[in-house]
Amino acid sequence: MTTPRIAIIGAGLAGLSLAHALKERAELQMFEKARGVSGRMSTRYADPYQFDHGAQYFTARHPSFQAFLKPLLAAGLVVEWTPKVVTLAKWEAPYKRDWFEPHYVATPRMNRLAQHLAEGLPVAVSVEIAALERQGEGWVLHDKTGSTHGPFDWVISTAPAAQTQKLFPAECTFQPTLAQVQMTGCYTVMIGTHAPLPWHWQAAVVKDSPLGWLAVNHSKPGREGLASSLVVQSTDVWAEAHIDEDVPAMQTLLLEELEALTGWRPAAEDHVATHRWRYAGTATPAGEDCLLDASLRLAACGDWSIGGRVEAAYLSAMALAAKLP
Image 1 (cartoon, rainbow, N blue to C red):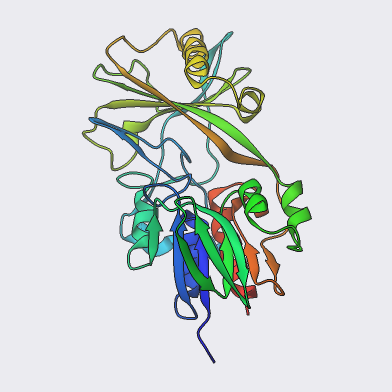
Image 2 (cartoon, rainbow, N blue to C red):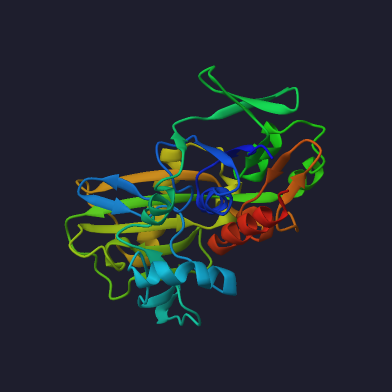
């Protein structure tokens, strides 16, 4: 039997986990539009600062994902994060918030997990696939520079549902399922300061505010010795209401809200930058662990299939690997 050629679009946790599951069964090629792997488990650098500006942590509830993490924990690549967490609101004093399950981070930065998984895999970065073309029984991929790749027997997308829907042909049988997925955005403000941050806590959940989450990023395990850094994230609801607005204007609003909540704002000489995530969370998942059209040899998986958590990306990828012929 001829070894199938499979193109995997996206090199976040779903794509990389899927590639590991398939690498002994198929000839693979991965395509990632960003300059590096990791998807939303990403890290931004602004010397001397470092920010986990996407996923802040992850949990492990399913035995399969727990088994996946076990050797990573043993190697120190993944570590449990046990910060002092508080709840913040404008009209009341901060109060302690308990976490009732382990929360994990990759070390020494969040994107290190994806970089580790990508070792030895055929990943082409800075390549954005713009169109698929059917040629005989296979698929040729066209990227945004006009270059072509393939042909491939299967094309699998681990990109957000809306991007997958746009890329795949109308006759794909799971297009209606992709259309019903609703993903939500998020604004992340990254603040680097040489002065110590003035709080006794390392993470905060925010109530009744455009802000949803604050994290003292340099306090996470494995970040010892880094310059002071704060990650400020909006709520999904607020971000969706402002998703197409001017990013600098949204940064100003979020900084004003930070000052109203904490009495603190960055100094003029501090580093401040904002990233807009159009697809950060999942309000309405696909309701299926993965999607597959066997006749066209197209498939898709990702955290949005199940529910938007880091663990869901892995579980969706494993489900698809089990269903592929």
